[in-house]
Image (cartoon, rainbow, N blue to C red; front, side, top):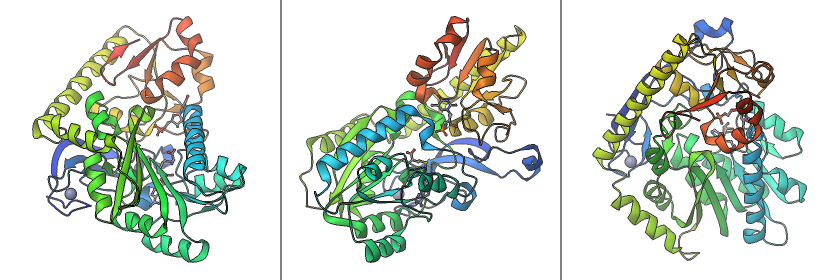
Length: 405
Ligand code: SAH
Ligand code: TMP
Ligand code: ZN
């Protein structure tokens, strides 16, 4: 059995999605033959409770000059990050010469408000496609993978940071010890580190199985994050649930002993125990519900095909790669996938090769059904697609269960 990336105990696999391409690798036909596949298996570490991928593809395969996910593609996420930036600026930054570092800063969406306010900041973003977009918006960015040695360099050249932020980034990183050691070095004595990632508790509760894909190396709970940071003499001082991405947790972290620990931390640690989040039965039941979702979704798509109903996918999301390839959704069942990202349009979905087309094509001739791969942005999408519903179109969702809306 593979060793845990945090505590090196043997990891116990609990779900196998089979042969899987990279979620964001959207190929063009000339790239079909060279597509990279790996076995997508998630496992649980009984040593430190971390849920993680058993075979982790190399980071350079995923995060490079072709990385096509831009944080600014969701209006709701942009306003979520603007709010977070405001909270950090108001509560944690000194009045003079504040310094903020973001790990996984992507196209600069979260750092932009700091830049606009003239606050000293630095984004660390290895994918040059998105790092360039940040630079274009005057968000200072270094295009490197964050780790302890880069942290040392930043401290030497620019000093320690009063806030270190990583949203949906730590879950994407395999060398967690080097990254957390880097945070320890980088964080000023009274500084705060804010981590936000999808919460494994919500993935289980919602049967949000498609959160599991190559880039998501780890699936955090408060127990596993506490263990990891404690190894580096850092303490979780508060946890705040967030509705984004189908359920996330925000962890506020400080140097051990520097800040009081909120009651919510002890309460959630206890709750994770009580509900048995890490019990074998919980993992087995999750696996059974994923199979049931697959059976129901495929039956529905087959029925619609027999009835000659047009089904179009909505959102060429990373998550959709797991759904499509694990259940065996084909271009015969889903005509194309609509997506607003120019870099994805004209490409094909990884593995199954369903065409990805612009949102304009979706709006020009509404299908009978839209399969909502963007279920985590349902509120944003349903609000702006009322014309589709008025035209008689219906949504298919599959998280938490298969339903037609
Ligand atoms: N924070 C943004 C982007 C999340 S996607 C948001 O929440 O929308 C994850 C990002 O982490 C990608 O842009 C990826 O290139 C970046 N990343 C991956 N490994 C990293 C590392 N070791 N250091 C810094 N960023 C990393
Ligand atoms: P993700 O699930 O990997 O974060 O990708 C989300 C994708 O969804 C991204 O390519 C942009 C696209 N998108 C739309 O097509 N329409 C929308 O309304 C939103 C919010 C995103
Ligand atoms: Zn472990």
